[in-house]
Length: 116
Length: 109
Image (tube, rainbow over all chains, first blue to last red; front, side, top):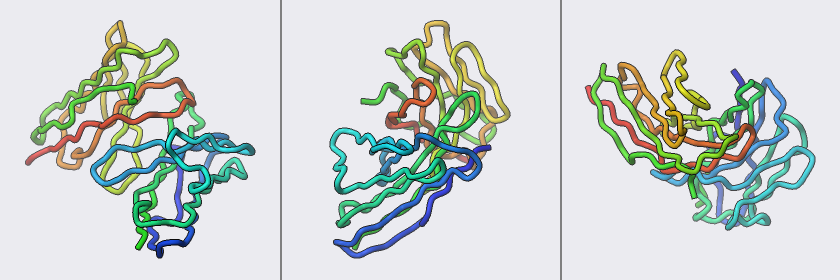
């Protein structure tokens, strides 16, 4: 089946620094990827839709200048958390629409971000 | 707002059949119904998808009535490893997915 990877799986950083998270579709091309954030014991919250070659579409309440998304190729989307603060600590998950007939979304394993 | 409503939690025992029902009263003509499973600190994993009637694969069955305003995920003979959160989502192929609260299933020995 379609595989989506994320890197890093876990990152710890100091407050004020920027962190980049990569999302890759390993065996298929993805023109659209999605970024989610999940706090402990809560559901996934969609942050933005990442479109290859164009600007991302952000959900209401998500700061586009803080969460920079780049989808430069058909297999890679990146999320950069700029000037991270402790409240940005969360589990970040990406997904991509798979190549199958159902077009279901395949999710990455997630990235645990801890901001000290 | 999520398009679906599910029970917050369910308990079961090993070997039992578990049925999780999801309400989606405002489902659109182009929407499919998809169920995902999520373990702690992992991304969701696709379980099954359907449009109408019944769909079965190697891990689950999905029952959808004619009006499509609800659906039921059926897990046959659950094991401890089926303890997870199960999400029901509706949307057209390629659409963004809005997650609801999901159902926390606890399987006891």
